[in-house]
Image (cartoon, rainbow, N blue to C red; front, side, top):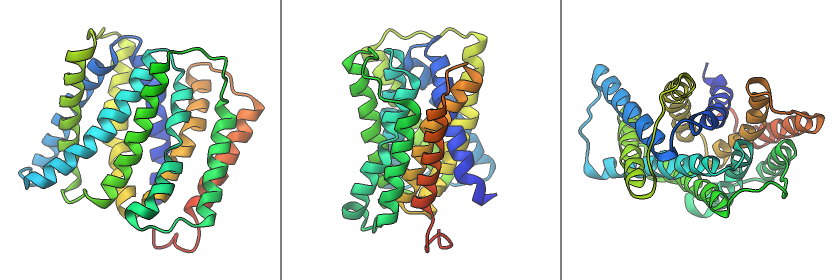
Length: 288
């Protein structure tokens, strides 16, 4: 089962872009995220109490977990949702934030003291090249500059969040840590909603299904797996998995939304898959 965690993570994380596109049709981005993480925080709190984890913790540990939540659930997801709501295609947003392994790989050495090998850099190059081939960087696509800036903010946030989680946090039990992360994200999104948007949520059947999937499969499932993978592996190796998200999102868009998928897209998916395999395999695979 543990060997399948990376694949499960990629599938669930990629699905967030597809369901996110559905959600922003019926809700303002920060209102929907505030609603989502209020439920997620309550869910993790109940789970922690059921398994009798100690919810009370040192303030330093709570603040570290909260910072992780602000980066991953707040700035990263907020940036992606806002960009999509302003007209950026979900696939383009996925491609931009998939640059994370490049930044994480470049920073893992000086920040964490990890050695990023030539094999990993080769995998990164193949992964990004494959992702770019799948989605294409169509300069003719028109969307506001604020949407691009928002997606780039998400990219920087998820990169810093990966390094932060590996270096400083992770001291709390996973369920307790996830509770504080979700609570911090909820407060962040409600604050942004109050200050910068006219909030609305239309509880259509599409919204309910998409939000339910994001809460159960993405927040409870994918993010818990991500925290586990960061804990047992290196930051740069874990981050490389994100290169699979854009091509997998493209395949999901083809299957569930009727979006086009060409031969070049399929070849790009294969290249990205090979890149991730190269970057995450090698002599230390058994140890990971």
